[in-house]
Length: 456
Image (cartoon, one colour):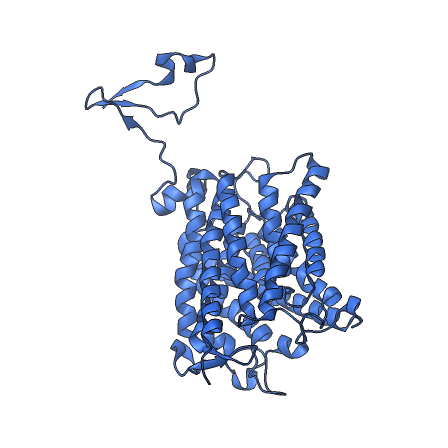
């Protein structure tokens, strides 16, 4: 089979776009964190690239996308560990060929960002070493099996496939595999680690909203590779996934800030950025199965529902620091279930008709089964993994380290240098930088109040 250079270029470009999403996530989460732990938060995303990337090549691809023999419905095998024995060419959705390794690279980026998503829930309080161990164990025992359930098939008519694939539930680009999976895992991890010191009484506001907006923009940019790239080719399915990624995201961002305005009296930049991510999450499983108007409907619902869902942590008492549960778990559930309502084969013959297209409730029921199974398995497995790591090496930092901030205690660094600056007044003279607040009573207007000379 001849390799199609256009499709190959698209899948490689999409892989690069999805990989960029994890640094984008680091900015998104980093801006939402407090200044004293922003580097730690960003490191948790970046180290996920390192650890999950290695285990994906070593055995993750094989566990997710090969036959597991008699257990093939539930888990893959190790026949292609180390990427040994891969076919040179894979068949894309339009019947043309792409290099198998291009698809392997594309799927690696999905595994990476799924793990990184979880980290936002436990900002300010997780041991970095314990997090590193968690990334490897969780990817192995949770992500790879669920990816196998939903996406693996041997390609033969009547052949073997993952049990959710066989069921007929639809998940084009990762509503269950990525977002519901990561969101409910975040909830389990939060319950193991407990609340931050002072939460919810002390204000823990985002320290850098421009970072949050930058991260949201990078995520949206990369998400076109996430969704449209999942077509496996540069074809009409990629086109519908692309436009639906625009429609749903715009609608969700708008819905979120409208809810904020009606509920709180102001529309915020944090709300707009959160709405963008909620829309991207919700359309991910449905992007190739609904019409563009259907994508707007999904976005409106997701934006409004997630805007209310993020406040549940205060009522229920779980400290999901950066709203991973409210945006990713809830948004993923909204998108996965609305496939059962809005999907139509007029858009994609490879899908199914939902309730509004005359398909009855059959597809909705299948979607609900996939959602519940993902929620149950991921929550229980994650809770057990986190508990064992906590017992063996401790998962939470000390109170002193948490109070001081994880940037200095875990990494011996700070994101912002508020130290002294040298003046021209002699080798021993420095000026205290304007990091300290001005004294009360207007002393900031006086030369001696603005800065004090410090002798070395």
